[in-house]
Image 1 (cartoon, rainbow, N blue to C red):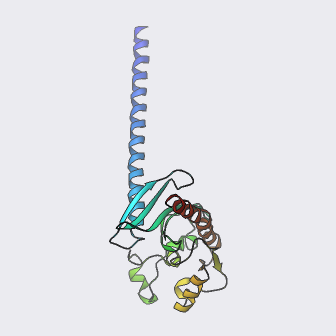
Image 2: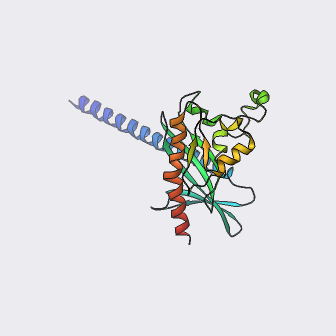
Amino acid sequence: MNDIFKMIAALFLTTAAAGFIIAFSHASTAQLLSAQTMRQEQAAVEQLFAKGGAIVAVKGKPPLPPRYWIAKKGAVTCGYAFLMETSGYVGPIKTVVGVDTGGSILGMAILSQNEAPGRGARMEERILKRPLWNGFFIGNNNVRPWFTEQFKGIRVKRPLSIAIGTPEWPWLPEMAKKELVDKNTISGISGATVTSRAVVKGIEKTVAPYLAAVRGANR
Protein backbone atom coordinates (compact mmCIF):
# COMPACT_ATOMS: atom_id res chain seq x y z
CA MET A 1 0.00 0.00 0.00
CA ASN A 2 2.85 2.39 0.89
CA ASP A 3 4.39 1.74 -2.52
CA ILE A 4 1.15 2.83 -4.22
CA PHE A 5 1.06 6.07 -2.20
CA LYS A 6 4.69 6.69 -3.04
CA MET A 7 3.97 6.22 -6.76
CA ILE A 8 0.97 8.56 -6.60
CA ALA A 9 3.00 11.19 -4.73
CA ALA A 10 5.88 10.90 -7.21
CA LEU A 11 3.49 11.19 -10.14
CA PHE A 12 1.82 14.24 -8.57
CA LEU A 13 5.13 15.97 -7.95
CA THR A 14 6.36 15.20 -11.47
CA THR A 15 3.14 16.53 -13.02
CA ALA A 16 3.23 19.66 -10.87
CA ALA A 17 6.86 20.31 -11.74
CA ALA A 18 6.17 19.82 -15.45
CA GLY A 19 3.20 22.19 -15.26
CA PHE A 20 5.30 24.84 -13.54
CA ILE A 21 8.06 24.54 -16.14
CA ILE A 22 5.57 24.83 -19.02
CA ALA A 23 3.86 27.85 -17.44
CA PHE A 24 7.20 29.55 -16.76
CA SER A 25 8.39 28.88 -20.31
CA HIS A 26 5.13 30.21 -21.77
CA ALA A 27 5.35 33.40 -19.68
CA SER A 28 8.99 33.95 -20.62
CA THR A 29 8.23 33.40 -24.32
CA ALA A 30 5.29 35.80 -24.16
CA GLN A 31 7.49 38.47 -22.56
CA LEU A 32 10.17 38.02 -25.22
CA LEU A 33 7.60 38.26 -28.02
CA SER A 34 6.05 41.35 -26.44
CA ALA A 35 9.44 43.04 -26.12
CA GLN A 36 10.29 42.13 -29.73
CA THR A 37 6.97 43.52 -30.96
CA MET A 38 7.51 46.79 -29.10
CA ARG A 39 11.00 47.15 -30.58
CA GLN A 40 9.57 46.52 -34.06
CA GLU A 41 6.88 49.16 -33.52
CA GLN A 42 9.36 51.71 -32.15
CA ALA A 43 11.70 51.19 -35.11
CA ALA A 44 8.79 51.61 -37.54
CA VAL A 45 7.66 54.83 -35.84
CA GLU A 46 11.17 56.30 -36.01
CA GLN A 47 11.12 55.88 -39.79
CA LEU A 48 7.98 58.01 -40.10
CA PHE A 49 9.42 61.24 -38.71
CA ALA A 50 12.37 63.42 -39.66
CA LYS A 51 15.58 62.74 -37.79
CA GLY A 52 16.78 65.14 -35.14
CA GLY A 53 13.71 65.09 -32.92
CA ALA A 54 12.55 63.02 -29.97
CA ILE A 55 9.87 60.35 -30.08
CA VAL A 56 8.08 59.61 -26.82
CA ALA A 57 5.95 56.49 -26.29
CA VAL A 58 2.77 57.20 -24.32
CA LYS A 59 0.14 55.01 -22.67
CA GLY A 60 -3.38 56.39 -22.78
CA LYS A 61 -6.85 55.69 -21.46
CA PRO A 62 -10.08 55.91 -23.53
CA PRO A 63 -10.83 57.91 -25.59
CA LEU A 64 -7.05 58.11 -26.05
CA PRO A 65 -5.27 55.19 -27.76
CA PRO A 66 -3.89 52.50 -25.42
CA ARG A 67 -0.43 53.23 -26.83
CA TYR A 68 0.79 56.00 -29.14
CA TRP A 69 3.83 58.15 -29.83
CA ILE A 70 4.47 61.90 -29.77
CA ALA A 71 7.18 63.32 -32.02
CA LYS A 72 8.83 66.48 -30.72
CA LYS A 73 11.52 68.86 -31.88
CA GLY A 74 12.62 70.69 -28.80
CA ALA A 75 9.46 71.71 -26.96
CA VAL A 76 7.35 71.72 -30.13
CA THR A 77 5.11 68.76 -30.99
CA CYS A 78 5.64 67.76 -34.63
CA GLY A 79 3.16 64.91 -34.88
CA TYR A 80 1.78 61.66 -33.57
CA ALA A 81 1.92 58.00 -34.49
CA PHE A 82 -0.89 55.52 -33.92
CA LEU A 83 -1.21 51.77 -34.21
CA MET A 84 -3.98 50.68 -36.55
CA GLU A 85 -5.41 47.20 -37.00
CA THR A 86 -8.08 46.55 -39.61
CA SER A 87 -9.62 43.44 -41.16
CA GLY A 88 -8.34 42.66 -44.65
CA TYR A 89 -9.52 40.04 -47.13
CA VAL A 90 -7.67 37.20 -45.37
CA GLY A 91 -6.98 38.48 -41.86
CA PRO A 92 -5.89 41.44 -39.76
CA ILE A 93 -3.63 44.12 -41.21
CA LYS A 94 -1.55 45.90 -38.59
CA THR A 95 0.11 49.19 -39.43
CA VAL A 96 1.50 52.27 -37.73
CA VAL A 97 0.50 55.67 -39.11
CA GLY A 98 2.29 58.96 -38.49
CA VAL A 99 0.45 62.27 -38.83
CA ASP A 100 1.37 65.90 -38.28
CA THR A 101 -0.57 68.04 -35.84
CA GLY A 102 -2.89 69.22 -38.62
CA GLY A 103 -3.89 65.68 -39.59
CA SER A 104 -1.83 65.12 -42.74
CA ILE A 105 -0.24 61.69 -43.01
CA LEU A 106 3.56 61.80 -42.81
CA GLY A 107 4.05 58.10 -43.40
CA MET A 108 2.74 54.61 -42.85
CA ALA A 109 4.50 51.32 -42.13
CA ILE A 110 3.07 47.82 -42.34
CA LEU A 111 3.83 45.77 -39.23
CA SER A 112 2.07 42.55 -40.21
CA GLN A 113 -0.41 41.22 -42.78
CA ASN A 114 -1.58 37.87 -44.13
CA GLU A 115 -3.19 38.93 -47.39
CA ALA A 116 -3.17 36.73 -50.50
CA PRO A 117 0.16 36.59 -52.39
CA GLY A 118 -0.01 38.47 -55.68
CA ARG A 119 -3.05 40.40 -54.48
CA GLY A 120 -3.44 42.06 -51.09
CA ALA A 121 0.08 41.08 -50.06
CA ARG A 122 1.30 43.48 -52.75
CA MET A 123 0.74 46.22 -50.18
CA GLU A 124 4.39 45.50 -49.27
CA GLU A 125 5.58 45.55 -52.88
CA ARG A 126 8.57 47.82 -53.53
CA ILE A 127 9.00 49.34 -56.98
CA LEU A 128 11.66 51.77 -58.13
CA LYS A 129 10.97 54.46 -60.71
CA ARG A 130 13.13 52.49 -63.16
CA PRO A 131 11.32 49.13 -63.55
CA LEU A 132 14.31 47.62 -65.39
CA TRP A 133 16.35 47.74 -62.19
CA ASN A 134 13.53 46.75 -59.89
CA GLY A 135 14.61 43.12 -59.71
CA PHE A 136 18.00 44.11 -58.29
CA PHE A 137 16.60 46.37 -55.58
CA ILE A 138 13.34 44.68 -54.59
CA GLY A 139 14.73 43.76 -51.20
CA ASN A 140 16.27 47.14 -50.49
CA ASN A 141 14.79 48.54 -47.28
CA ASN A 142 15.45 52.08 -48.53
CA VAL A 143 12.73 51.56 -51.15
CA ARG A 144 9.43 51.80 -49.33
CA PRO A 145 6.23 50.01 -50.41
CA TRP A 146 4.40 52.10 -53.00
CA PHE A 147 0.96 51.40 -51.56
CA THR A 148 1.69 53.02 -48.20
CA GLU A 149 3.94 55.74 -49.64
CA GLN A 150 1.04 57.23 -51.59
CA PHE A 151 -0.77 58.08 -48.32
CA LYS A 152 1.73 60.85 -47.57
CA GLY A 153 -0.18 64.12 -47.62
CA ILE A 154 -3.59 62.49 -47.25
CA ARG A 155 -5.68 64.31 -44.63
CA VAL A 156 -7.26 62.02 -42.06
CA LYS A 157 -9.90 64.56 -41.09
CA ARG A 158 -11.38 64.49 -44.59
CA PRO A 159 -13.22 61.61 -46.30
CA LEU A 160 -10.83 59.27 -48.13
CA SER A 161 -11.61 57.61 -51.45
CA ILE A 162 -10.08 55.11 -53.88
CA ALA A 163 -9.60 56.01 -57.52
CA ILE A 164 -11.48 53.78 -59.97
CA GLY A 165 -10.11 52.87 -63.40
CA THR A 166 -6.71 54.48 -62.96
CA PRO A 167 -3.28 52.82 -63.13
CA GLU A 168 -1.61 51.88 -59.87
CA TRP A 169 0.40 54.56 -58.09
CA PRO A 170 3.91 53.68 -59.37
CA TRP A 171 2.85 54.06 -62.99
CA LEU A 172 1.08 57.42 -62.66
CA PRO A 173 2.80 60.65 -63.80
CA GLU A 174 3.78 62.99 -60.97
CA MET A 175 1.01 65.46 -61.84
CA ALA A 176 -1.62 62.72 -61.58
CA LYS A 177 -0.23 61.65 -58.21
CA LYS A 178 -0.47 65.21 -56.92
CA GLU A 179 -4.05 65.50 -58.15
CA LEU A 180 -5.01 62.33 -56.27
CA VAL A 181 -3.47 63.61 -53.04
CA ASP A 182 -5.26 66.95 -53.49
CA LYS A 183 -8.53 65.03 -53.82
CA ASN A 184 -7.68 62.92 -50.75
CA THR A 185 -7.76 59.85 -52.98
CA ILE A 186 -5.47 56.84 -53.26
CA SER A 187 -4.83 54.30 -56.00
CA GLY A 188 -5.96 50.81 -54.99
CA ILE A 189 -4.10 47.55 -55.49
CA SER A 190 -5.30 45.83 -58.68
CA GLY A 191 -7.32 42.75 -57.80
CA ALA A 192 -7.30 43.59 -54.09
CA THR A 193 -10.12 46.07 -53.61
CA VAL A 194 -11.04 44.63 -50.20
CA THR A 195 -7.50 45.11 -48.91
CA SER A 196 -7.31 48.67 -50.21
CA ARG A 197 -10.67 49.60 -48.72
CA ALA A 198 -9.75 47.99 -45.39
CA VAL A 199 -6.76 50.31 -44.99
CA VAL A 200 -8.81 53.38 -45.93
CA LYS A 201 -11.59 52.44 -43.49
CA GLY A 202 -9.01 51.78 -40.78
CA ILE A 203 -7.67 55.31 -41.13
CA GLU A 204 -11.16 56.81 -41.01
CA LYS A 205 -12.29 54.72 -38.02
CA THR A 206 -9.05 54.62 -36.02
CA VAL A 207 -6.50 57.30 -36.88
CA ALA A 208 -8.91 60.22 -37.28
CA PRO A 209 -10.67 59.66 -33.90
CA TYR A 210 -7.34 59.03 -32.14
CA LEU A 211 -5.90 62.28 -33.48
CA ALA A 212 -8.97 64.22 -32.34
CA ALA A 213 -8.75 62.65 -28.85
CA VAL A 214 -5.01 63.34 -28.48
CA ARG A 215 -5.29 66.93 -29.70
CA GLY A 216 -8.22 67.51 -27.34
CA ALA A 217 -6.26 66.12 -24.40
CA ASN A 218 -3.26 68.37 -25.10
CA ARG A 219 -5.09 71.67 -25.40
